[in-house]
Each structure stands twice: as C-alpha cells, then as structure tokens.
Length: 294
Ligand code: ADP
Ligand code: MG
Image 1 (cartoon, rainbow, N blue to C red):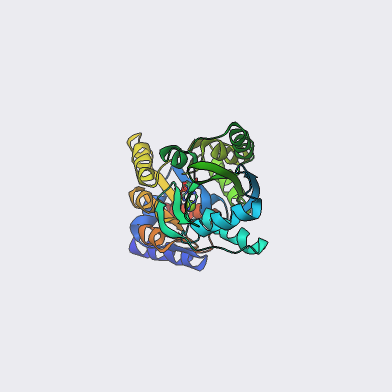
Image 2 (tube, helix red, strand yellow; image 1 turned 90 degrees about the horizontal axis):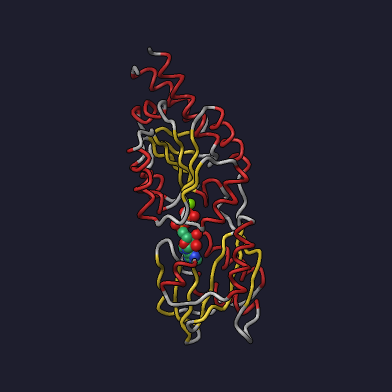
C-alpha cells in the first residue's frame, strides 16, 4: 500500500478506537483467514463471580471456605482470584493473613493459612499435589462445567475441602463478532487455559469452529505456530500476560484495551473499546485500504 493509504487507514482506525501500531499490521490484517480468541477477558468480560460453593470438610462452613480461599487468592491477580476476594467482601467475612504464598502460572495458588497448607486451583494442580477428588466433587464439577462455569478446587491439609463454581459473562459484542467472522468465512478458534468441558459449553453457545482447551500459558504460542504451519494466516486476540507470546507469534496480534500492559505491548493492534467487533472493523479497513491502491 502507499504510505498515504496506510496513513488514512490508521487514521480512520484511531478515530474508532482501533489503534494500529504499524503499516505492516494493517497490510497483514487483510489476509487473515483464522482468528484465535482467548476466552477469559476476551470473549467474556473477565469479571467472574462466585455462583456455587460445595463444601467437603466437616466443620468448615461456606463462609469459612470463602474466607480462607480469599486469603490465599488475595496476592494473585488472576480474574478467578478476584472473584473469590470479591465474594469474601460481599459476604463481609474477614480475610486472614497468608504465609509462603506461591502462584503456579496457569494452574493455581498455594499458601499457609492458620498453620495449614492450602491450595486453590484446577484439577491438574490438585493431581500434581496429591489431592484426591471425591466422587461427589466430580459430579458437582461436571454439572457446573456443562453450564460453562469454571470450577476452582480448594484443598486444605492434603484433602479436598471445597469446589467453588465461578461464572463469567459473555460480552454481547463477542456474539456479534463471531457471527460476522463466520459471514466473512474466517475460521474462529478459541484458545484457553480453562477446563475442556467449560470451554466446550462456551463454544456451543457461540458456534465457535474449534476449541483448544487446557492450554498452559507457555503453549499458547505453540498452538499459533501449529496453525501457521498448516498454512493459516492467523490473528490472535487476547488480554492476559499469558497471551503475550501468542500475540507476538501471530501474523497479527490484537490486544484488548482493558487487558494487561504486557499484552498491549506485544500486540500490533489495540482495541481501545475492548470490543471484538472492532477487530472485524480492523480487518475490513485493511481490506478496503489495500484494495484502493491496487
Ligand atoms: P485463561 O486462558 O482462561 O485466561 P489461565 O491460563 O490464566 O486461563 O489459567 C488456566 C487455569 O488455571 C484457569 O482456568 C484456572 O483453572 C487455573 N488458575 C490459574 N490461576 C489461578 C488462581 N489464581 N486460582 C485458581 N485457579 C487458577
Ligand atoms: Mg484472558
């Protein structure tokens, strides 16, 4: 494209809250045939709330579960952690101090609370720490996952204490955006660290072509490269620290404006209004500008 066409294109984008960092990004956006979407914070609002609490430790009630879970989640910046801390605040329960806090990227957190070792995280995290799932817990998890909820497991003293259900809301603009992508014959892939069943429930609701779930943060980038090896021209849209390498690897990296600084720095295009429909506007803009100069 001519420098003028690119200037006009980026100018039009900027007016609509779509920041295109370079002329190259605008040109690459034209050829995109696959859009990879992160789930939490990208398709969903990223503001999950606690919906269910199932307790399995005798003598430990729901308020106490939330109180201790909030204590070990408090130092974490993960949206799930924020949901637990917010629930403690809503319930008005105290959040005790925690020692030896440790976060395991893409899996969960641990710490000592009231002299007891506590863990909060996903199933893999529990397995790795030798925590057995109870049959009742399995049923609760299956049911919640079928509703698209994320299950957070909480363990204390080496035993499972609770299963906490957390639900996030799908952005209205995401529904619209995915429909438009289908109309444009662009394949839509969802990439998430969340559980497979939870991801599939969201996939069904939105009619997403393909879902890649239970992906560790370091493997998101690999999935992008795998699609590129299949000959796909890939745009990745994400918001988290865990999305940054994938955003950099994609042909076009698109960050959600409300996302983390690391994601924004790694991207070629930033959606200031945090709406997925603006990614489609960017692709259309690119196609229009590039066509004009041919
Ligand atoms: P996503 O791709 O959905 O943004 P992440 O890669 O950040 O997810 O995390 C993957 C999974 O690891 C989460 O779905 C959750 O099960 C677990 N997890 C990560 N951090 C935490 C935390 N602080 N507390 C509980 N679970 C966590
Ligand atoms: Mg995210």
